[in-house]
Image 1 (cartoon, one colour):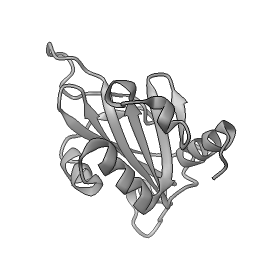
Image 2 (image 1 turned 90 degrees about the vertical axis):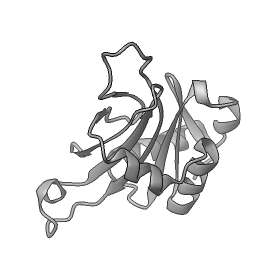
Image 3 (image 1 turned 90 degrees about the horizontal axis):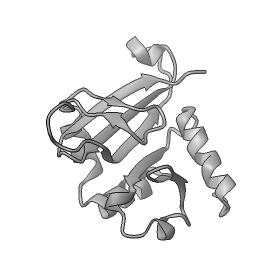
Image 4 (image 1 turned 120 degrees about the vertical axis):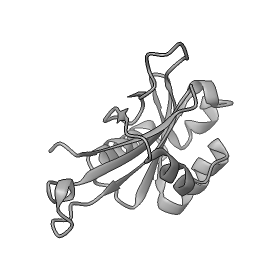
Length: 149
């Protein structure tokens, strides 16, 4: 990975295009980050937080360090509730929205899976992004979609 912002942004763009199946994307909302400036050495600044795209095991370790949660345990919990995560992996629509609680995405854990016609379903249609989100209200949810070409 290059050290300049353009290189990190290129990694982020490549991930969203399904071209980084060995990497993990982590989005952290600025409210939950001690210092975004410290993360900008390895991440990309977005409107309300920072996005990190890291190699698989490094990404899982960084997710656990940032959230205190095991990445795969979090994904398993979040996948029990369907929700909507934005295709840039930095926001979403909480399934509990509408109550009086505050709703915004605190963090996202995501990975890309390459097209796999033998599996069928959406996996036969193209590369798939799996995203797992935690809302400020405490709800966790998941979404997946085929990458637009």
